[in-house]
Image (cartoon, rainbow, N blue to C red; front, side, top):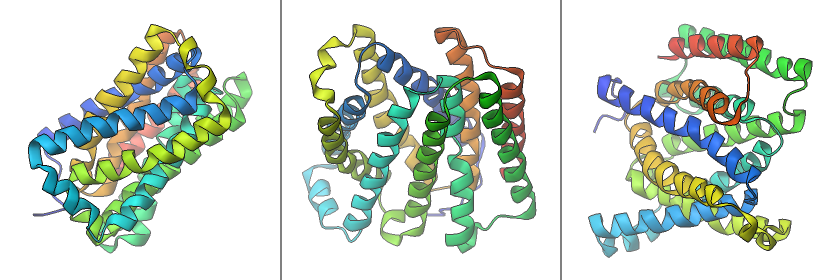
Amino acid sequence: MNRHQRLTFGPMALLVLLCALWGVQQVAVKVAVTDGMPPLLMACLRSVVASVCLTGWMLAREGSATLRAMLLRTALLPGLLLGLCFGLEFLVLYPALALTTASRGVLFFYTAPFFTALGAHVFLPQERLRLRQGVGLLIAFAGLALAFADGFRVGEGSLLGDAMCVLAGFLWGGTTVLIKAHPGLRSAPASHILLYQVAGSAPLLLIAAGWHGDFSSPLNATALAWISLAYQAVIVTFASYLAWFWLVMRYQAAAVSGFTFLVPLFGIATGAALLGETPTPALLLGLVAVAVGMRFLR
């Protein structure tokens, strides 16, 4: 199978749908944290529920022999590394969204395409950046820098929260490059890649939640917080991430990841509609610069 097909209308439409789901997710996390759901416990439960859904889906579709074979694959060790990176990503992101606004959090988390494109340029010779793509990255980076500086000026969010969202984006970009760079992962089905991550991340997030004392307060969470958790686990982590890894393994990493610059647009719009967050002109200008930069990555 050609692993570097050109994006056509169907895959691009799917990517836009995924971006919309992920933009809503950041607001869902913010709502759940505000409504009493401990962030690290929420991240752990999300991975556990998604693992159960994915395992059931794989058993129904492929049979138990597939799962046994997966454990014997040469990709098991890098798969566990993927799980560690995935766990660290949300170990950082969920507490960060308790510190900053959803609008800012979604913008800074989706710095991931920078790190994906740069990592692909270094580690994937077949996906080196062309001059046009490099210019696009610089334009998008300027937009993010403008949004970051605007946070200091208007006093929104926090330096720590914004920086933690960028770190989470770095970890996400790193996992995408690892999947494309390792032969065993690159040839694995999308369902295996996702199971490595969600199942591998659960123990780390469980330990972190226990250490942070999150198990003492989940019953204080509202019904809306639990609905938010269900959305994150089933719709986002199980269904949308499965589609995402299917796309990652078939198309150029920079082109696919470039579409995630659309996520802040959906996130900011959802934050304004549901949380009453008012984006500043500088934040919107930064978003425009990010969108322009994304066009250059294609």
